[in-house]
Each structure stands twice: as C-alpha cells, then as structure tokens.
Image 1 (tube, rainbow, N blue to C red):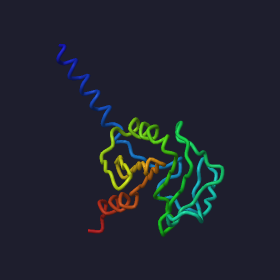
Image 2 (tube, rainbow, N blue to C red):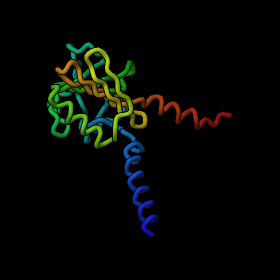
Image 3 (spheres, helix red, strand yellow):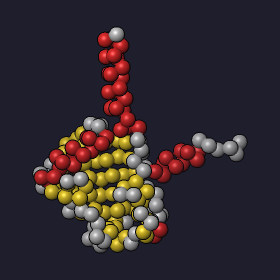
Length: 168
C-alpha cells in the first residue's frame, strides 16, 4: 500500500513538472501573437504603437504609459516587434543587471528549468522553450539583462493548415 501511495505521489509530481511545458503562451500582455499592428487591441482598447526611432531592431515599437514591471522586476525598455507583414511576433525587454536573478526566477517558476545555456563573449544566455515560444534571457557584460520572447506562431499556423488539407 505504501509503495502504491508513493508511486501515485511521484506520478503527481512528475505531472506537475510537465504541465508548464504543455501550456502554450498565446500572447504577451494580452496582445496575441500574429496580431496586426494597426488593429491590435488589449481589453477592448485599440493600441497605438509608436515606432522606436532609436532602436536598432527592425520594426520595433513602444506603447505609451506601458507598465515597466514584470512581477517585481523593473524594466528599462519594452519593445514590441512586428514582422514585415506588420504581425506581432516578438517582444524585447531590457533591465538592469541587479534584476536578472528575479527575472530568471519568474521564468523558472513558470516554465521550469531552462533548456539551453551558453556563454558567448561576455554574455550568459539561457533559453526556455514553451511550445512555439522561445524565451531567451541574456545577462550582458554584467551590466544589464535582455529578455527576448519570440513566437513562431506562423509555423504553427502553417502546420495546422498543412495537416488539415482536404483538397486530395
């Protein structure tokens, strides 16, 4: 009986560990991946994206009066990035280096341990893979952190279309 109870308990813990991986990340701050830039809404309000003219990232936009925190992590920059068809697919967040451990905690708590880790030049890079969304946390030169959240929604959409073909 004790062995059966132990097995059920362990199975429950294993299920909890895998549950985060099975939940898709469909949006960032209620803006769904693939939304058109000129027709994106959050909580019923149309969003007015403003081109970030200082950014080196192509098609990077900001929002006025943006909440510059995630949990207790204070951010210096939030950029919403759109593809050439003006569809939302990526977010770039930046904060001070003293916030990197808190950001890492948030990601680990929500999605488990990171899947990839690398050290490139003076940067420590960690990646979490959640369905078709990749979270890349980078500590840069012990001076700041950058978090990129990138959705591969287009590939997922194409896969669904291509696996439900009924033309032949």
